Image (tube, rainbow, N blue to C red; front, side):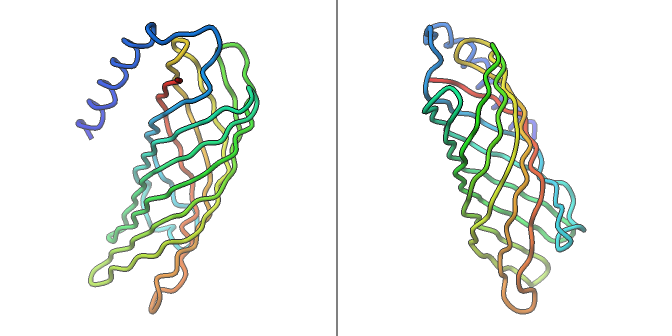
Length: 182
């Protein structure tokens, strides 16, 4: 965990250092962000699992000041004696409401979730389509660097076959975000 924090801190220093070089009058149309936080299982099938880690890299393309698409590649993990791990690739539509340096947004979309469950001698995986809805806020630190928070809920039900079958891995993903506009 210390290594992850050091990496994020180094990235923040670099972004803040180069941001004056790339500042423009209008907000850039693209953004990339790293999102670090937690996955909080909510479905009955995973209610014994603990809150785990959630990490996501995202790329956002603004088509209008009030509308964007976001592509995300992530990782989340939770444990309960066994281990639930997922690698989602998501696509979200974002409704954006800019207020000065603040950007409020709502998002919704679809994703492909590769999910692996390990417990004792059991080790199975499945790739399944899932859905997510969320809200967030970003605030500009410089014209191109921002920080933010996001909360989204995901729905996905991988099928691990006999003896487990379908498992709902629905849950909350909450994160703190560091982004760069270009």
